[in-house]
Image (cartoon, rainbow, N blue to C red; front, side):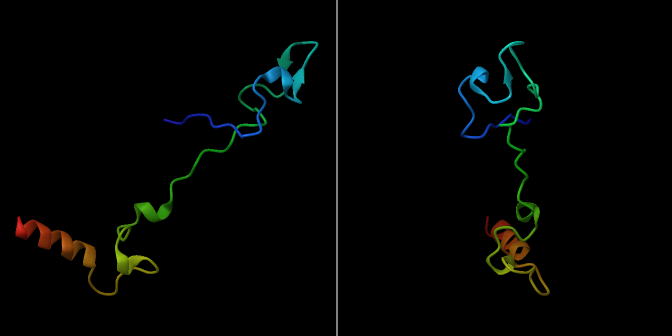
Length: 79
């Protein structure tokens, strides 16, 4: 679900915008191509990484065995 985000300097009303045609009373660019619409935020690719949150995987993946998997197995066995 994407919501439209606008720039902070967007006028409160369209009639104060540079792209407003006061004679036709419409926006020249159209609502979909508004000058003040910001691009959608892209998710951080690191958050999708299996090493996200692992202190040893901050700069590179773990060497050999993933410590995050070992810690999860240990937590399960203790319960």
